[in-house]
Length: 310
Image 1: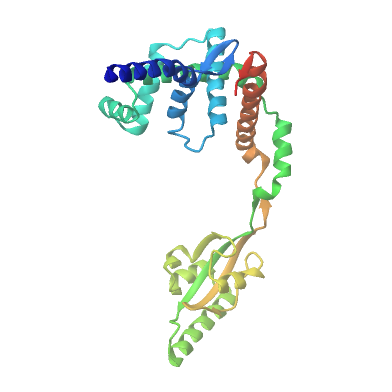
Image 2: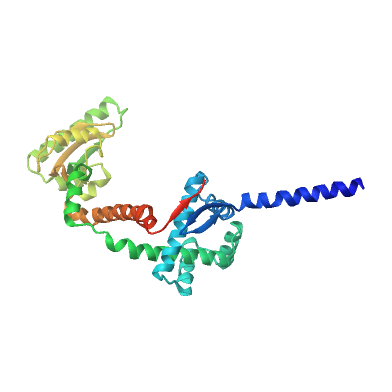
C-alpha cells in the first residue's frame, strides 16, 4: 500500500509540475503584429546564432531574431521570389570558392547539425533578404561628384606623394676593412672618374665602362627613388643637386660613389581624377550601410507592431 501511495504522489507531483515547466519553456518573449515569438523558438535561434558570435548578449540575439522575422514579413509582403535555380547557383558558388564537392559540403553541414534541406532553406532566405535590400535600399543611395570632391579635399594629406629622384650611380667598390693602399687606389680611381666627368665624358657611358655596381650595364641607372630608399650617403649627395649635375666622390661602407641627378619630382598629391572612382565606392559603401541600418532600426520597425516582453 505504501508503494502505491508513493507512486501516486509522484505521479500527481509530475502532473502538477509539467504544465508549469511547459509554460516557462514556451512562454512568449516578443510579438510581431500580434504573432508570438516563444522562448523555445528564441533558444533554438540563439543556439544557432551564437556559433558564429559567441559574445552576443540575449538582448542582441532577440533583436536579431525580430529583425529576421520582420525581413521575412517584408519578403512575403513584397512578393520576393527566389527560384530553385538561384539557390543552386548560390551553393555552386560556395563550393567553387571553397574548393569542395557535394560530399564535403554535406560533411561540413553535418558538423553544424544541419541538413542539406535546412541549408537550402537558409540560402533561399538569405537571397530573398538580399533582393529585398537591393530593392529597398540601393536605389535610394547616391554619391554626387561634389561629395567626392569634398571628401578628397578634406583628406588631401592622405593622398600626398613624397619627393622622388631619378638617379644614376658610379661605384668604385671598397671594403669597409680595406687596407691603406687599397683605399688610396680606390680614391685615385674615383678622382680620375670625377675629372673625366667634369671634362664632359657622358655619365652613363662612363658608368658602363668603369662602375663596379651591378647596374653598370644600364649606365648606372638607379631609376626613381624616394628619400630613404637608398644609402644615406647617396641621399645626402643627391639632395642639393640640380637635374643634370653630379656629385663629388663620397664614401660609404661599400665603396666610393659618384651620383648624378637626372630628374627630380617634388612632393605632390595624387589627382582627384586618379582617385575619384575609389572614393565614390568608399562613400557609397558607407552611405549604403548607414541607409540600411536606418531602414532596419527605424523604417522597418515603424511599419510593424513589435512588443518585447520581459
